[in-house]
Image 1: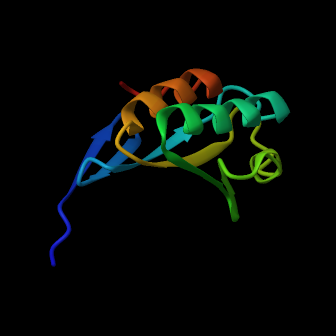
Image 2: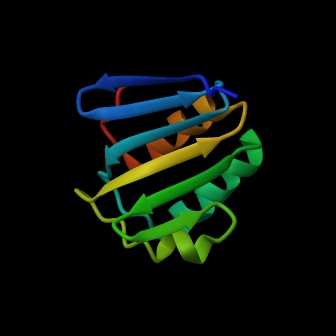
Length: 106
């Protein structure tokens, strides 16, 4: 079975879409991902009914564990990969983008 996917390049941000249910973005954070921000990521995932995974270096954090997100050590200028699964992934992306203050394109 073939998987349909689309790869888009916009200003050094890579967006991969698979069946409009999953997206991944490479971005650079402009804000810290601390306790409040990690709790907000969890709330965004719950509100949009999505699964959010953030990868920074060799560490991975998910919306299921606030501690795992805090342990990523995301500081301004640190690059990360944001992966969102679910039907409302676009809405979740824009909320997380504003939370991290990233310069990713719309």
